[in-house]
Image (tube, rainbow, N blue to C red; front, side):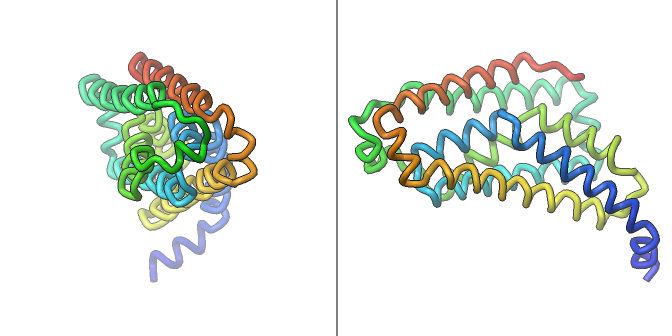
Length: 221
Protein backbone atom coordinates (compact mmCIF):
# COMPACT_ATOMS: atom_id res chain seq x y z
CA UNK A 1 0.00 0.00 0.00
CA UNK A 2 2.85 2.37 0.79
CA UNK A 3 4.34 1.69 -2.63
CA UNK A 4 1.00 2.40 -4.30
CA UNK A 5 0.66 5.71 -2.46
CA UNK A 6 4.22 6.66 -3.34
CA UNK A 7 3.66 5.89 -7.01
CA UNK A 8 0.45 7.92 -6.97
CA UNK A 9 2.07 10.91 -5.27
CA UNK A 10 4.94 10.99 -7.77
CA UNK A 11 2.89 10.19 -10.88
CA UNK A 12 3.65 13.46 -12.67
CA UNK A 13 7.37 13.16 -11.94
CA UNK A 14 7.52 9.59 -13.23
CA UNK A 15 5.46 10.46 -16.29
CA UNK A 16 7.79 13.34 -17.18
CA UNK A 17 10.77 11.03 -16.73
CA UNK A 18 9.09 8.39 -18.87
CA UNK A 19 8.46 10.85 -21.72
CA UNK A 20 12.08 12.02 -21.55
CA UNK A 21 13.33 8.44 -21.65
CA UNK A 22 10.99 7.55 -24.52
CA UNK A 23 12.31 10.43 -26.66
CA UNK A 24 16.00 10.01 -25.81
CA UNK A 25 15.95 6.25 -26.25
CA UNK A 26 14.08 6.38 -29.56
CA UNK A 27 16.59 8.86 -30.96
CA UNK A 28 19.40 6.58 -29.83
CA UNK A 29 17.77 3.46 -31.27
CA UNK A 30 16.87 5.08 -34.60
CA UNK A 31 20.36 6.49 -35.16
CA UNK A 32 22.71 4.38 -37.31
CA UNK A 33 24.80 1.97 -35.30
CA UNK A 34 25.62 -1.75 -34.94
CA UNK A 35 21.99 -2.73 -34.20
CA UNK A 36 20.76 -0.72 -37.17
CA UNK A 37 23.35 -2.33 -39.45
CA UNK A 38 22.62 -5.92 -38.40
CA UNK A 39 18.87 -5.46 -38.80
CA UNK A 40 19.30 -3.89 -42.25
CA UNK A 41 21.64 -6.70 -43.30
CA UNK A 42 19.20 -9.39 -42.21
CA UNK A 43 16.27 -7.43 -43.59
CA UNK A 44 17.64 -7.65 -47.13
CA UNK A 45 19.09 -11.16 -46.93
CA UNK A 46 16.84 -13.16 -44.60
CA UNK A 47 13.16 -13.98 -44.20
CA UNK A 48 10.74 -11.70 -42.38
CA UNK A 49 10.56 -14.10 -39.44
CA UNK A 50 14.35 -14.10 -39.21
CA UNK A 51 14.55 -10.32 -39.04
CA UNK A 52 11.81 -10.28 -36.38
CA UNK A 53 13.87 -12.70 -34.31
CA UNK A 54 16.88 -10.43 -34.82
CA UNK A 55 14.87 -7.47 -33.51
CA UNK A 56 13.81 -9.62 -30.55
CA UNK A 57 17.44 -10.44 -29.84
CA UNK A 58 18.35 -6.76 -29.82
CA UNK A 59 15.49 -6.04 -27.40
CA UNK A 60 16.79 -8.78 -25.07
CA UNK A 61 20.19 -7.08 -25.11
CA UNK A 62 18.48 -3.91 -23.90
CA UNK A 63 17.22 -5.79 -20.85
CA UNK A 64 20.79 -6.83 -20.00
CA UNK A 65 21.90 -3.19 -19.97
CA UNK A 66 18.86 -2.24 -17.91
CA UNK A 67 19.51 -5.05 -15.43
CA UNK A 68 23.10 -4.21 -14.61
CA UNK A 69 22.37 -0.47 -14.61
CA UNK A 70 19.73 -0.97 -11.93
CA UNK A 71 22.07 -3.19 -9.94
CA UNK A 72 24.88 -0.66 -10.21
CA UNK A 73 27.15 -3.01 -12.12
CA UNK A 74 27.12 -0.63 -15.09
CA UNK A 75 28.97 1.93 -12.98
CA UNK A 76 31.61 -0.64 -12.08
CA UNK A 77 32.06 -1.59 -15.74
CA UNK A 78 32.35 2.03 -16.83
CA UNK A 79 34.90 2.80 -14.11
CA UNK A 80 37.01 -0.33 -14.57
CA UNK A 81 39.47 -0.02 -17.45
CA UNK A 82 39.96 -3.78 -17.58
CA UNK A 83 36.27 -4.72 -17.67
CA UNK A 84 35.41 -1.95 -20.12
CA UNK A 85 38.28 -2.99 -22.41
CA UNK A 86 37.30 -6.67 -22.31
CA UNK A 87 33.69 -5.91 -23.25
CA UNK A 88 34.86 -3.43 -25.87
CA UNK A 89 37.22 -5.89 -27.57
CA UNK A 90 34.71 -8.77 -27.49
CA UNK A 91 32.03 -6.52 -28.97
CA UNK A 92 34.38 -5.17 -31.62
CA UNK A 93 35.52 -8.68 -32.51
CA UNK A 94 31.94 -9.84 -32.96
CA UNK A 95 31.09 -6.91 -35.24
CA UNK A 96 34.23 -7.55 -37.28
CA UNK A 97 33.30 -11.23 -37.57
CA UNK A 98 29.77 -10.74 -38.87
CA UNK A 99 30.93 -7.81 -41.01
CA UNK A 100 33.61 -9.93 -42.66
CA UNK A 101 31.10 -12.74 -43.17
CA UNK A 102 28.80 -10.33 -45.04
CA UNK A 103 31.66 -8.72 -46.96
CA UNK A 104 32.86 -12.10 -48.26
CA UNK A 105 29.40 -13.62 -48.89
CA UNK A 106 29.27 -15.52 -52.14
CA UNK A 107 27.56 -13.85 -55.04
CA UNK A 108 24.24 -15.12 -56.38
CA UNK A 109 22.66 -14.18 -59.69
CA UNK A 110 19.46 -12.91 -58.08
CA UNK A 111 18.12 -12.27 -54.62
CA UNK A 112 15.84 -15.25 -55.04
CA UNK A 113 18.87 -17.49 -55.69
CA UNK A 114 20.65 -16.23 -52.61
CA UNK A 115 17.51 -16.42 -50.49
CA UNK A 116 16.83 -20.01 -51.52
CA UNK A 117 20.35 -21.08 -50.57
CA UNK A 118 20.10 -22.95 -47.26
CA UNK A 119 23.58 -21.71 -46.28
CA UNK A 120 22.29 -18.14 -46.26
CA UNK A 121 19.28 -18.85 -44.05
CA UNK A 122 19.48 -18.07 -40.34
CA UNK A 123 17.52 -20.08 -37.81
CA UNK A 124 15.48 -18.34 -35.13
CA UNK A 125 18.24 -19.01 -32.59
CA UNK A 126 20.97 -17.67 -34.88
CA UNK A 127 18.95 -14.52 -35.55
CA UNK A 128 18.27 -13.94 -31.84
CA UNK A 129 21.94 -14.53 -31.05
CA UNK A 130 23.09 -12.05 -33.67
CA UNK A 131 20.78 -9.32 -32.42
CA UNK A 132 21.47 -10.03 -28.75
CA UNK A 133 25.26 -10.13 -28.98
CA UNK A 134 25.36 -7.10 -31.25
CA UNK A 135 23.55 -5.03 -28.63
CA UNK A 136 24.74 -6.59 -25.37
CA UNK A 137 28.43 -6.35 -26.31
CA UNK A 138 28.26 -2.73 -27.41
CA UNK A 139 30.24 -0.65 -24.86
CA UNK A 140 28.59 2.54 -26.10
CA UNK A 141 25.26 1.08 -24.96
CA UNK A 142 26.79 0.47 -21.53
CA UNK A 143 27.70 4.14 -21.22
CA UNK A 144 24.33 5.25 -22.59
CA UNK A 145 22.31 3.28 -20.07
CA UNK A 146 24.62 4.23 -17.23
CA UNK A 147 24.03 7.91 -18.05
CA UNK A 148 20.30 7.28 -18.37
CA UNK A 149 20.00 5.58 -14.99
CA UNK A 150 22.16 8.12 -13.18
CA UNK A 151 21.26 11.42 -14.83
CA UNK A 152 17.67 11.02 -16.06
CA UNK A 153 16.18 8.52 -13.63
CA UNK A 154 16.31 9.62 -10.01
CA UNK A 155 18.13 7.19 -7.67
CA UNK A 156 15.10 7.33 -5.37
CA UNK A 157 12.82 5.99 -8.12
CA UNK A 158 11.23 2.70 -6.93
CA UNK A 159 12.69 -0.46 -8.44
CA UNK A 160 9.32 -1.36 -9.94
CA UNK A 161 9.19 1.93 -11.84
CA UNK A 162 12.78 1.53 -13.06
CA UNK A 163 11.95 -1.95 -14.31
CA UNK A 164 8.92 -0.51 -16.08
CA UNK A 165 11.12 2.05 -17.84
CA UNK A 166 13.50 -0.73 -18.86
CA UNK A 167 10.78 -3.01 -20.21
CA UNK A 168 9.36 -0.13 -22.21
CA UNK A 169 12.77 0.62 -23.77
CA UNK A 170 13.13 -3.04 -24.70
CA UNK A 171 9.64 -3.03 -26.25
CA UNK A 172 10.33 0.25 -28.07
CA UNK A 173 13.52 -1.24 -29.48
CA UNK A 174 11.73 -4.33 -30.74
CA UNK A 175 8.92 -2.34 -32.37
CA UNK A 176 11.33 -0.02 -34.20
CA UNK A 177 13.64 -2.72 -35.53
CA UNK A 178 10.76 -5.07 -36.33
CA UNK A 179 9.22 -2.27 -38.39
CA UNK A 180 12.52 -1.45 -40.11
CA UNK A 181 13.38 -5.07 -40.85
CA UNK A 182 9.85 -5.94 -41.99
CA UNK A 183 9.82 -2.97 -44.37
CA UNK A 184 13.10 -4.08 -45.93
CA UNK A 185 11.82 -7.65 -46.31
CA UNK A 186 8.71 -6.59 -48.24
CA UNK A 187 8.55 -8.15 -51.74
CA UNK A 188 8.38 -4.74 -53.42
CA UNK A 189 11.56 -3.63 -51.62
CA UNK A 190 13.32 -6.90 -52.33
CA UNK A 191 12.39 -6.56 -55.99
CA UNK A 192 13.94 -3.11 -56.15
CA UNK A 193 17.26 -4.34 -54.78
CA UNK A 194 17.22 -7.79 -56.39
CA UNK A 195 19.79 -6.87 -59.03
CA UNK A 196 22.35 -5.41 -56.64
CA UNK A 197 21.50 -7.05 -53.30
CA UNK A 198 24.94 -8.64 -53.12
CA UNK A 199 26.61 -5.26 -53.17
CA UNK A 200 24.18 -3.95 -50.57
CA UNK A 201 25.15 -6.84 -48.30
CA UNK A 202 28.83 -6.08 -48.90
CA UNK A 203 28.26 -2.43 -48.04
CA UNK A 204 26.54 -3.42 -44.81
CA UNK A 205 29.45 -5.75 -44.10
CA UNK A 206 31.85 -2.87 -44.58
CA UNK A 207 29.70 -0.72 -42.28
CA UNK A 208 29.79 -3.41 -39.57
CA UNK A 209 33.56 -3.70 -39.90
CA UNK A 210 33.89 0.09 -39.62
CA UNK A 211 31.66 0.09 -36.54
CA UNK A 212 33.73 -2.75 -35.09
CA UNK A 213 36.90 -0.70 -35.52
CA UNK A 214 35.21 2.33 -33.94
CA UNK A 215 34.09 0.22 -30.99
CA UNK A 216 37.63 -1.14 -30.58
CA UNK A 217 39.00 2.40 -30.49
CA UNK A 218 36.23 3.73 -28.23
CA UNK A 219 37.24 5.44 -25.01
CA UNK A 220 35.21 6.15 -21.90
CA UNK A 221 33.70 9.61 -21.98
